[in-house]
Each structure stands twice: as C-alpha cells, then as structure tokens.
Amino acid sequence: MNQASLSYRVLDALSVHGDDYALGLTERLKLGFFQRLRLYGAVTWLEDERLIESYNGPSLPARGNRPRRYYRLTEFGRRVVATMAAAPS
Image (tube, rainbow, N blue to C red):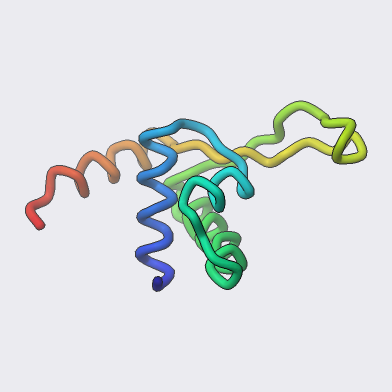
C-alpha cells in the first residue's frame, strides 16, 4: 500500500468512525508491521495539509499519566472526503 492510499484510508476511517488514536487506527485498518510504521508519516502529512488535526486525550495511568494523541478530521478534511466519495471511480 502506498502513502496516498494509506492516507485516504485514514481519512475514510476518521470520517466513518470519528476521532481515533494511532494504535486504534492501526487496528481498525488492519495494518501490518511496516504499514504501521508508515502510518505516522501519513498522519503527519495529513496534518501538514490541514486535512486532520491532533489533540491530546486524557492522561492515562497505564501510560505513565501521558495522554494519547487523537486525530480528527478538520472541516477542510470533511469536504475533501465528501468530494472524493462523490467522484466517479
């Protein structure tokens, strides 16, 4: 799977299922080991392009009181997903 297709799958997952964190996305998208490594590049690119944004969730004792970083679509990202869904294949 190339970077563009992984990025589209991330956008699609966030549009269907809502906010999620990286491990949740890897499980939801059933990513293999090397694809998991590429996920961080994809979310960084999507953030740079203002298609998604990240925020910190609540602190978790199981993570040494560190929060999970969650991702969500921006308004621009929602419009892009809607446009891509409406495009003929």
